[in-house]
Length: 637
Image (tube, rainbow, N blue to C red):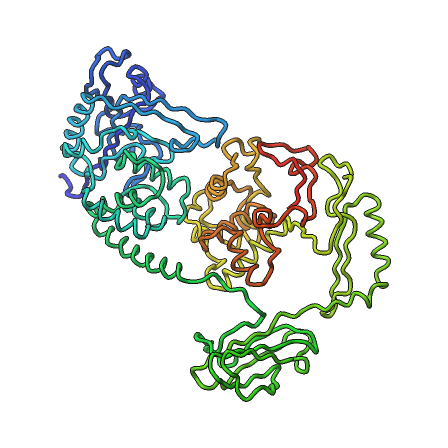
């Protein structure tokens, strides 16, 4: 009694090259302990082949499972050994790796060089004959499901390579291809406004590739692009997400998956409008005070008590209010509940300054603005940041013991220090001691040491976690761009497997994620082995997100880990679309007027003489540590 409820097992057809000659291919595909495929097709003039010509050799029955695909993905299915037929084609590229470069095993990596030979025309005729017969027997194999090994496993494989004649198969009625006119139309569109990398990732996945949308050109995405180009743009295998590649993906979707294409094009138009709007917007302006507002507020609070009200810090008897107006106007202004006596009318484009000395108190003060007239007028209201007064003269004899202590340390070899003491809004102590650079790389005294100055700039070192990453996270929370209760994968979609899905951003912040204290990626002798060796920023980021192992269970205990903050920095970059250093400088430090708080200052106009030296022999810990490209000079800036 046969059931009407069943489907075909075989959904796809996967083509491979053997990368070895006929005899070695037979050994690898037939002998126990190796791999297998359903079919093997030799090439002409192979000295190791007694048959001497292309022919169809069946190795595994089509109803059986051959071991040809390995870890794989295509069009929503994983493990393609379960539902595909594999054909191995004898073709031998010449490939090698540069061991001096990154240890990646990816076939498309920069450390991999391959020379691909042309396929034997007689061999391709046999391939076409076989493929047509297979598709006739397995009607569920759609044109888009005739793929190469590199299509379904792009992070591991590059076969059948860029020389395989996919278009010739298409002309024979096998597989998928785009229409040239359609590609040209999309190419012009994407030349005018390139698609985002996230959109290209989604388009590749819509066609069938196992790409995760991360919004960045990560190694996995670049591998997928290389595989796609080998299949559909074999004359243009750059591995780059350019307009030509995006156009080819959309031309294929247009032909075979029009609904997905329509949805992605709609998204493209929205992103295009957003890109234009973003390009026209300005960077955050430098705030000219702790209150720096234009009133009336175009987006006022719904709570009446806080409408056009501000808090500012001051010291008793200090403070200033600055008002500018675009039209002749008047307003009521109060500080700490007391109405100020101001001009009856503010003239247009004039600047008015009022002392707040009689109204302010030490600590938090309130400013309220109301009754702005006429209604169309706009007032620019500013309250500058509090300024510290220099009162060191009055306290010059109060810190004799402190001076003696620090000077004694300097006399005994300590390089130097800067001491600043602030009390009640006054600088009561500001002194430089010793030297900002006293020793050479070998720890010997310099003939002309560099004296310490009160404006010498110091390295924040590990405090960067607080003054950069943490402040950036706080700003993103404040602006509604980050929710620390969300899973990490909400912001880093590729953060999957081994329990990563259960980790939340808050677990990183509280150091309860279960990571070890650190991983020495920069050192090939790191405790996790050469697979975790990386001096590439992108490679290190990918290892952090997808490979860094957990040491203990999530939430078990709080244990400090550099990995947590490295991941938090990547979350900031993924949300903002900017490197962490640029985001902090443009959105945090510059608006606060912190011109000497920055990353890589020597690359931004500063010179070594402005900085206190840190470590004498770079990162070597006095020669106890070594790894490739280690800095061995005195770090200064």
